[in-house]
Image 1 (cartoon, helix red, strand yellow):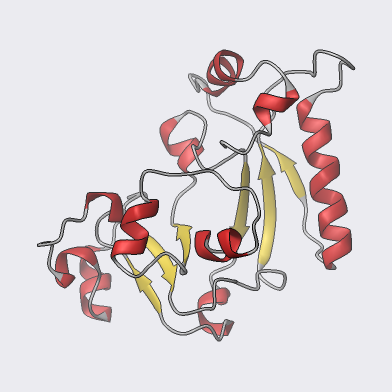
Image 2 (image 1 turned 135 degrees about the vertical axis):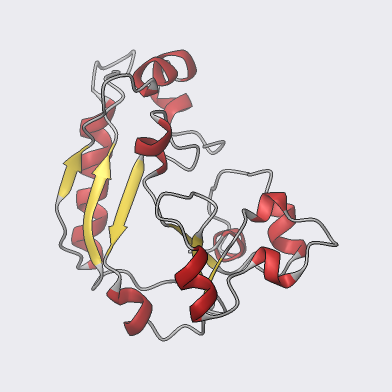
Length: 193
């Protein structure tokens, strides 16, 4: 769901510096999908959360949500005078020549979709971080809690996809980052995430 849809429903979501940018440029109710696994690319925690939904590319052809646009630059870098051609790929030829696999600025944006993207038929797998931490009170590990919550939501939503524990490359600093940032379940799953 888009940030706008989540806000309209009164649900909890992480505030981002880019929220106002989304409102300013008319993309607040659109769905952003990264073209890379940010955690893996940066060897660190993804600021958007510990869960990665990997979608198949067919979602672009089979989702009737309006147009799918691809950013050339991250909207957080846009300014009022940034022209359309510097913000977006403007043609198939432009995309073919300048899209770079692994460039985290190149995001597929599902425009004018009403704030929701039906992913259930296009979900290949879910990758879940394991912060290797436990709650203080009951000594329950966060990975198990998150896994169970996702599994329940998938059952209720009629979604079937494998959930995999993230395997980090050597040198990934996510575990230290989790330890430094989160010491109990209230902080790990707080609305500020």
